[in-house]
Image 1 (cartoon, rainbow, N blue to C red):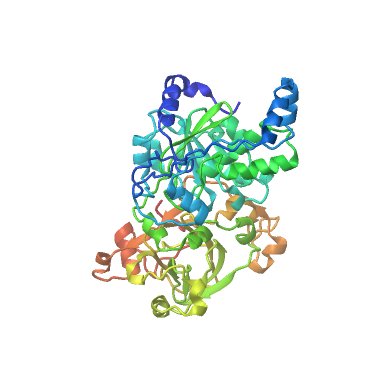
Image 2 (cartoon, rainbow, N blue to C red; image 1 turned 90 degrees about the vertical axis):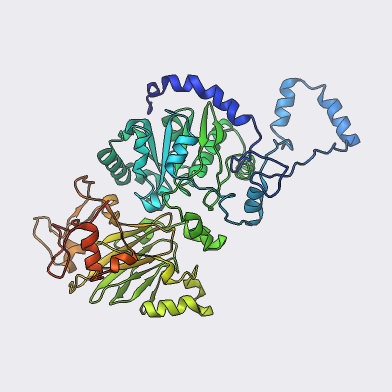
Length: 539
């Protein structure tokens, strides 16, 4: 068995019955979990109560029932197994969820899409000592892991699941190797999480659902940041269990069942933040799991999503596959010398003078290059029809948050929360210590990260089989390969350094801001190499 149930011996007996009563007492929206009401259309949870009409009974139906009543029980069962049943349980949904699911009609307001922080979720929604399953997104790892969780539970009391792993690895069997090893190393060495408490899955592709079901305890509360895939994973577990219970089902019936299931049998899923509004209990086999609303670390998240259309939001958070777009063989483009990398209007990366970088795009953003900031400001104000696809939003630069990127050596990843990452690789000789600037729309968070590729696949060492250094042009043919293992002694990622107006007082240069923020001198005399490349990184 993967789980030691003795960790929660008293808990499961003491409150499972009480919770079942609590969460089933009032009718709730099947999709978002909110308590339903039909008194005030303008208030959250409103739904339209449909009165069930008495069906018209046909003469043929009366004859059918007459003969059916004379059949033996076994014959009735056999007959029912060969016919489609029209009976279905009533699924109640609030107006908000019906409008989203059926018409993609929504208005992002805080009363309809509440988003809380982790502390609020843990102190107001989840019973003390209840089993916790923490989900985090592979797209923006490790941004989805909030260390604050360890204020509420000890590391061995939490089960961690990396979702959407199909964006990192192509096949389910590949997870057994380097990816799982890296995630286990990271969580175990950094936070002391037992390796048996760590899982990797894809709710979309139903990867490892059997192991997950058996590995996490009954009465678990499933938590995670917004859009990390909680409801999708629960639906995957539920669907897998139902299909196993109906293994003799024909292909056509199986297909119909899956379609019907996706249309309402599990918790609702949506690309919108704050979609789940209250706890949703889900019975899967002989276990009950609780789908918990997502949390965030920024108060501007809703405003970030409000700046885009629903279609754009759906596009942005889908992400791209690292194994297609993030390897050393993947397509890249070059940017240099004060050019601007346009993150489709969600942000802008200012390239330093005398610098050249290769860019690999592992996001679903349509990246483009602009001449300079002046050109960007002009396009934001007046976007030509031919360039509309380059701007999901037209937020002016002065309304954006400004950051500087700490110095780095070698390829790095610029990770965008819930979106993915952009691999940035310096090329050519470095002629300046000028820093990269980034403008981001409020609510969009980002970090700098070591290249995750080096932890998930073997990379060139730059040495031949006799450990002699090679020229770069010979690496592909002669270099040995090595897999990098996580080392807790060095930072895996770094915060970007936010620049405020008061930081510009005095010298005002980015280098001076860096010195003020970090207390470390950085100027043209500083040489960044393999030995000190993390000197300016702060997790």
